[in-house]
Amino acid sequence: MTHAKTAELLRKPELSNEDIVFLLGLRDPESCRLLQEAAFARTTELMGNCVYYRGLIELSNICTASCRYCGIRRENHDVKRYTMSKEEIVAAAVWAARSGYGSVCLQAGERRDEKFIAFIEECLIEIHKATVSSVLPQGVGVTLSLGEQTPETYRRWAKAAGCPESLRYLARFETSNPELFKVLHGARGDHEKQLEHRFRLLADLREAGYQTGTGVMIGIPGQTLEDLCRDIRTFQNLDVDMIGMGPYLMSEGGELQDFGQMDPEALMQLSLNMIAVTRLVMGPVNIAAATALQAIRDDGREIGIEYGANVVMPNLSPQQYRAGYQLYDNKPCLDDEPTQCASCLEKRIASRGRRVGWNMTGSSRRWLRRNGRPDEAEPAGGLRVGQNDAGRKTIWIRAG
Ligand code: SAM
Image (cartoon, rainbow, N blue to C red; front, side, top):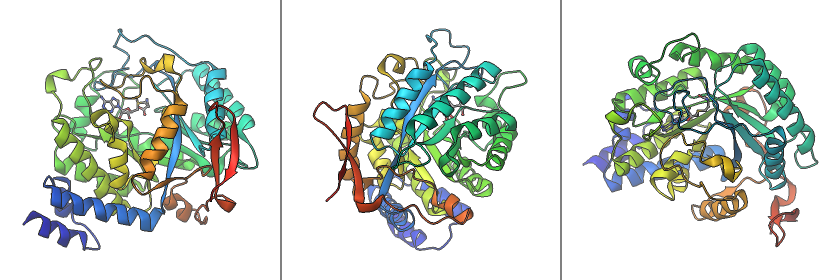
């Protein structure tokens, strides 16, 4: 019986590649429930009960890369290109800090020109200045997701961010299968992506002081369970601190429509299994419940939390820009305001037995341990955040 074998594997202290492939392929409800329960329990044991918010600011969709799966690839001329102003970016970060988010994530298409590098540097300096407070003494934590840059640029941005304890960078390698990687990034040119560069940049980032995050897309046409197992082994070999994985979803603006997309129900289960098995293998890393899960099912991110994720990234981009950041079709929350997103998400997270880590920067415990730091404590007295009736001005209240 599948669920008897699942239960047996879940008791093992270490999983072999064969075990991982078996668990990733689970489909029957009883076995999936066993996997989910094991991953949730392991997350509680290693990471505690909190889910951390990273307020996502999609600051520009201008991109010099040509990733064939992506709706904002440079060849997609149907996209109206935008870059948020410095004031808008800083305002979104300040809103996040005042609303109790311990950190924000700045994401954009890839640019390596000096104008862009200096612009990000200025934004980081301003964000830091505007968000240092007694609650966040280093200012709001910052995760950057701005693609491949030079070690010099990573160092410049790290210095500008001014928050060495909560400075992070996320760069997915998308798949560890070199052949599949080539199919996904088939274009020519010096700066086109190469798998080896993706690995190298994670080492450069660590050297520059960042907590490093990576991830893959799940259900890429042609990808096998063995590929996903190798992805997990690659996370281990790279010894990353954070992982952001989500289902591959077809994009009208991409170039892979002819290959189709997995059936949504199977894709959802495979993505959840990948989160759960990654948690079991990787231990105390941060794992994000990707927005793409919500594109398949309205409660996709919450189910991701049940399967072992402990980070969510509520979208804080101003509404007028959201339609321009369509990485894949049917991206959710196009019309939601950040205030709506945050309050509804808190209830949804509570419904799954977790609570939001208000005002916590939520560093990966793997990183804290590697660097000899203690686990982050919840703010004294259970400080949490509340808003007045107008939903605008933030006030601090004591929980309980
Ligand atoms: N340019 C930066 C980089 O490549 O790291 C960050 C922006 S990029 C748009 C962020 C992530 O979006 C990629 O790492 C990729 O995994 C994801 N993405 C793009 N197109 C997608 C699709 N069709 N389905 C699922 N995820 C997608």
